[in-house]
Each structure stands twice: as C-alpha cells, then as structure tokens.
Image (cartoon, rainbow over all chains, first blue to last red; front, side, top):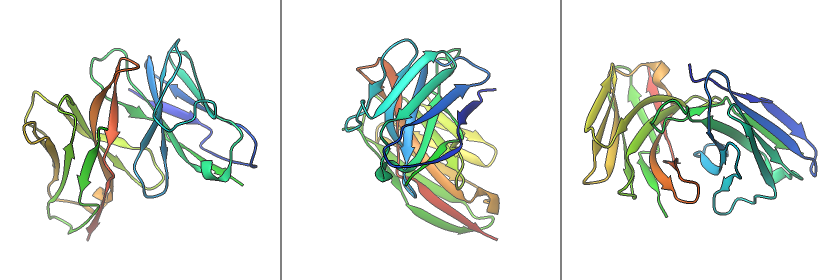
Length: 117
Length: 116
C-alpha cells in the first residue's frame, strides 16, 4: 500500500514553455501532498504544500505565480512550472500523506526530471 | 528558521562493519523523525521512523535512537552490505502554522559507501 506515482518521469522542454507534472496517490487518499525540488547531490527542498480543496502554501522564496499547484481531488495534485528557464532544471518529487493514519509519514513519488534548454 | 544538521556528509565502511549517521534539529516541538534511503535517480524510501515518545526503535539491521533533551537522533546500520550503499536523509517534523499541518525538514544527506 501507500503507492505514489508521478507523470511524466522526465521531460525536456524549451525555455519559456510551461510544464505540468502530475502526482497521484494510487491506493490511498491524500488530503495533503508536498512538492520538493532536488538539485544534483543536494537534499530535498520543500517548495509547497498542496491541500485538497484549498490554496497551496508556498515556502519562503518560492514564486507561487511560477510554480502553480492544483489539488483538485484526494488522489491528484499537479505542479505547473510556468515559463520554464534553464535554472528550473531539477528533479521534482512529490509526496503524499495517507488521511487514514494520524502519523506524518510521507510517501514519495518516483520524481520527474526536468531539463529546460 | 528551523533546520536539521546531518553528519557526516560521506561515510565509507567495509562490508560487515556498522555505520552511524547523526542528526540534530532545532525545533523543540518536533515530534516525528523519519529516515529515508535514496538510491541514485530514485525516490526516497522510508526505512525507519521514530516518534518523540520513544527513545529507540529497531528493525532488523537498522535502529534509530532519539535524545529529545539534546535534540539529536541517530541512524545505526549493523552488518552493512554493499546494497546499503545510497544517500541517507534524516528529517524532522515541524508545524506549518499557515497551513495547519506538519511538514518535514530534511538534513543535507549522508552518502554511504559499503565496500566488499
């Protein structure tokens, strides 16, 4: 149980285009999903927290107009990188918490590798 | 702000030896401490976690200890095997006031290499 999927697994795009990444909880419902960014050989940096049915909460320094988050259902959250630039190239990973449990355990998706040319 | 410090950044051991990774956290209200293992290019996998009402937890070759007074916790891997080679991240939960939820702050990671 507690499987999280992400799509796509990798994407290459031109500078200035927008990219949408989907995060799904496959066998559980997740009221809260988290979006992280990980640069090579670095740790996971929380970008924002996605709450079903409400606006996302962004971490300090993360532009909410550039990284659009939508959490329309208990099993799906999307991250859209708008007007992507080379510096946005990174490994984007989502995680989800199971509403059935009271603990804070986060289950991670497989990640999306974004390369902006 | 809240942070989690992790040491060492790299650790090299011989197969069969033990490995210890240490983390300290700053927020005294933190009450949940997971450890994740991440292999190259893959997702972080939860390997063990501990809550603040417990001082130690063990799962086969892996154990975690927590000292709330000192605000530090450690991962212990015994009888290491080459397949234990990966990057290990510790994390501590903090309360996200604006959203009303707990979020995780991650340490910088430890690259463990187990040599045959």
